[in-house]
Image (cartoon, rainbow, N blue to C red; front, side, top):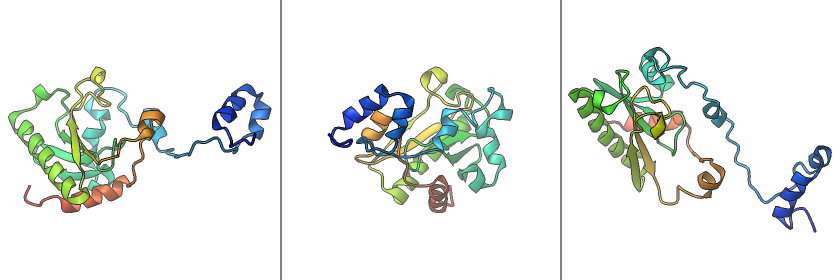
Length: 197
């Protein structure tokens, strides 16, 4: 039997062999393609995640103090702003955040709540014009237990979806292929954002 004749047996043989013998099989086809995403290690290790819940260590509080391209900001409103998600679920994944460091939707002022909603709607319109998604996932994770990566600063997710974008890769390999650089997506969305908003 050749090594690539039965992919399952190759994997099993690798586990059963002593380390030195297993090294000899390095590079032998095993039926798996490789999609290298080393930049994801920053997310896995929690790099850039606030050490505490204070506004001093919050990336959503620091982003508005940077130039738009560096902070990945697409649009700055009066009480809220729109930026690219540094660890996107899909290409064009946007976040709508209040400037104020609040964690709960009920803590928003009426002005913030209205602008957050308006910017979410504009983000959907602009993304439709720029990338033609088939749909969207919108949502807020309120608290760490609900899945918020940065629970201390409220943020609304605007995730464009395309038919077939959920394939085996995220389901089996916990990996998401994102075919566009954040900088390129930010530039396209910012250029298409309505100036009168």
